Length: 176
Image (cartoon, rainbow, N blue to C red):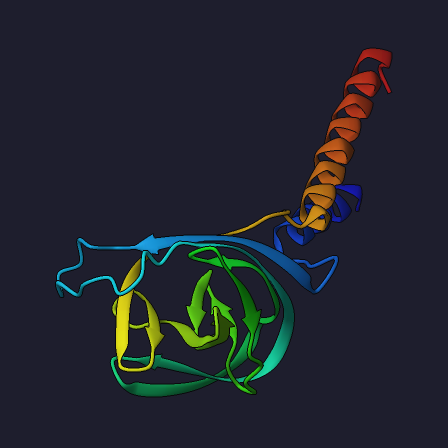
């Protein structure tokens, strides 16, 4: 019975768990002049920002190559942007059904910087769009703090398995 309890505990460590539904992503990007499309850079395209997201469940639109693919799931929706685009302060423009990340890639995130409106989205690469112009970006978005719940559960499982092994060793030595 104790072995079964230990096995169940180990399995729970493998299930994704979120101690908090708020996440923070450190985002850096710059214009990618080496794209196969040969698109020029209208700006340097340097983004240094922190995106705050909230996990939300609902229907999202995955736009790719001009096609829209709706799906239902739980995704990190951007609730705040703190940072700069080419030295200009960025401000999120909330747009219902948009402003989310999928596997760390932007999906129609609207923002303003320096009096100009922009959008970030993934379409054959991460694109920075503005009126009548777009450029591809070298993109990096890293969740800044891993979820401690997963590591805590895994540590607890390993600790309990170690204690169980020590208990069995002591029984063997004592002859019980």
